[in-house]
Length: 258
Image (tube, rainbow, N blue to C red; front, side, top):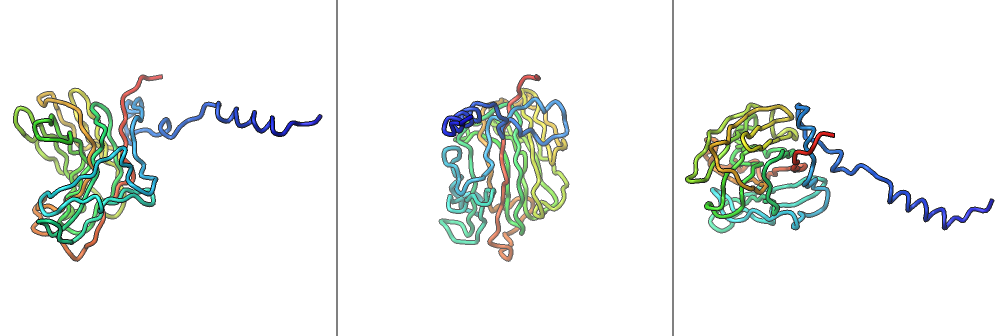
C-alpha cells in the first residue's frame, strides 16, 4: 500500500497539537508539608528562565532607601536566576547601590512562594514580601515572608504590618536557619481572610491572626537594600560586589478538590 507521507505528517502534527497535555503550571504545587494545600493551583509565576527581566510583569524598585540607591541596572536575569547586584558605588546621596522588582499585577488571598539565596557580608537587607506599590495611604497590609539581614546568615524574620487607620507592626519573629548564603531555600506564605501562615522549606514557622488588620490587594516584592537593620553598623565592603538571587516566584489560588 502506498503511503501518502505529506498527508500522514499533517495528521500526526494535528494529533500532537490537539492532544491534551499537562502544562508546567498544572504540574507545579506548593512546597509545603500539608496535604490541604494541594488544592492550590498555580495562576502566576516567573521562573526567570529568560535572559532579561520580563518588564510586562515587573516594575523595578528605584530610589534611595537607607544606605543605597536602587537602580534597574543592578537587576538582571541569567542562568535561570534573578540576580540583584549589590555594589559599593557613589550614586546620588548614597555610597551603595542595589535594586529589586515589584510585580505589576496585584494579588490577595492565596499561597505565595519564592526560592532564594542570600548575599554574604553584613550590611544588606534582602526580602521577599507583599505590599501595595504606591503611597502609604493606598496600603492596607504588608506581609513580610522573609526579611534577612546579612549580618547574620543563620537568621531571618517574619512580620505583618497594618496601615489603616495608622501604621502598626504585629511584631517580628526571628527564625533560626542553616547558612542562607550557602544554598537556596524556599519561603512560603498562605494568606487567607483570617490568617497568615509563613513557611520555610515547607515547614510552618509562624502563624498570624490578621482579623484586626484591614486587608487589601498587594504586589510581590523581591528586593535587597543596604540598611542599618539587624544591629548593622556599616556595610562590609570586603565582600563586594555581592549578589542576592531568586530562582523563582509563584502565586497559587485555592481550587476545588477533584
